[in-house]
Image (cartoon, rainbow, N blue to C red; front, side):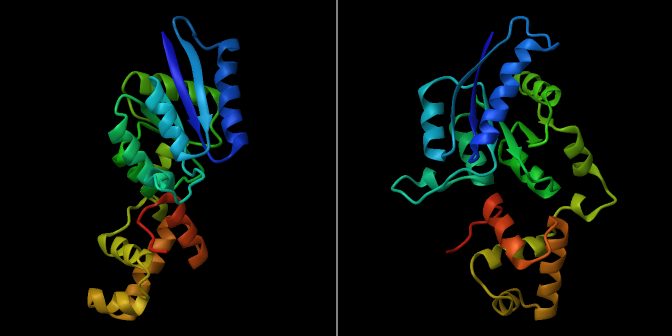
Length: 227
């Protein structure tokens, strides 16, 4: 069986690393009988990725959370993060999507899986975990790296908790460019309460400053950000 693979990530070193690990599997102790891995392409842009997926059968896509986006006549060129996962899952349902992400936050993992991803692994993954990922998604099973699975279901940390509806609303309206005062008026809450929701959301997302928060929201595309 030939398994066609595409690797997409904004960093060349990440793409080459995944490629090397896949090629190295054929010389390790893993059972490679009846399986031939064929990496048919790699890219750092969403537009080129779509072309690769449209031109041939791709069984597995290793997708970095961030790609090199740009504003063009093609709206796909501006997508990455959760938004791109959702679009690809709908456009290419036969392709198994494995997200390769630097983020260990449980909220992000849940959103990626809900958007249609079949797997979620970190940049620290080893060859054995990569092998397990490939076999799992080929068998139609979802795969989350063990360490990330522990974080996802751990109940003793705020990182393991989902954002509340209020927290989601505050972040969503912040991404639309509203100030905390404007959000307070819209939600009919005091500034102090809105600020508390924001700080609680930041704590759960593992960020400490507004700059880190906006960077995370931009990279993960948890919400559309008005520019």
